[in-house]
Length: 413
Image (cartoon, rainbow, N blue to C red; front, side, top):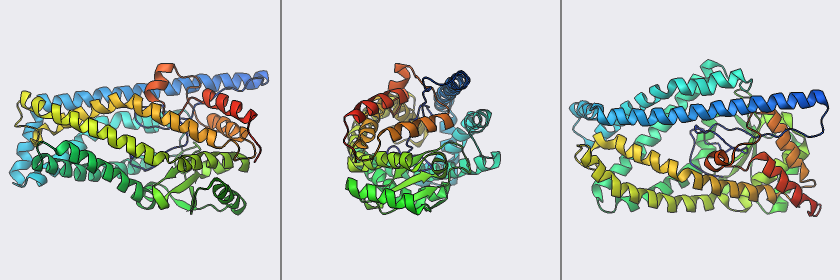
């Protein structure tokens, strides 16, 4: 399913619970285990809580640092100085904007580099979740930065063209353009973006592949490709994903998941992904995103010009005021986050329940989640506030509860 496009293009199976988009599967301790296993489960649960708290703390620090960076750039005169500097190099407005954004995004990334490194390398290795070397982390980060920079510079050039060309209606044109960009990203992600970050190959387990294609046919969901995605080179975490839109949607199954789960469990995870496709969640999310972006861009239209003028800039199309636009977009994103998370949790529950009656044993999804939980570290019982603000999947205890209730009344496939 498609959401806000990540640099690696992957939408994960498990619930995320961090500001920086890290993917964490929440776990539960199994009741009725022997004392030594119970002690191990409790130790793992405590470790998971600690890991999640640290991830959230880093996310919060990154958010504060982002606001501080934007405030300093705007209020210290650095933004105007940078605009003057690129203005000496070229008189073309859009080349000035591109040069400004290149320097700005480089500085922004450098400011956050320490926290990104601590979150992506230090913590992951400390908790035994990473197979990635420091060198590979820097290579991946450079790819992400380059892709994000190219997309951002291109997008902002289009945005400022409509701001200058349609000063009273640019917000509407921007909302339409945002929708088109998301659709295009959904189309190119499977073929172009994902292979930049991961090695893919057709699923080599023919028995499993035949079983999955048969399940897709029973569910009435056309699937042309089921691919194995090599996650083990970077992480010990296991996962699956569906990427793309329309006829080019592909279901990706991590090699770590293939090594961890039985065929029954993988089939249940696959059925969950089919549920997203059968229930048209990608297009529903795109529609909701289009409506939300129209509201957001209108608010930006109302607020950007007056706030830019109040800070001494020439107006809404002043390149030096670009960090102010970035700041407003960040604020709108924070406000919208709980609503987006609520919608995503609703769709994830629908996809979970979709498997009932379509796989032989719905409990296989529960056992898959248990295995994933033990392979990954996450808070087994997040607070209700954390769930509402950050979780785009229901916590595992809730998923298990409604799955078991539904399974009691499910016909066997």
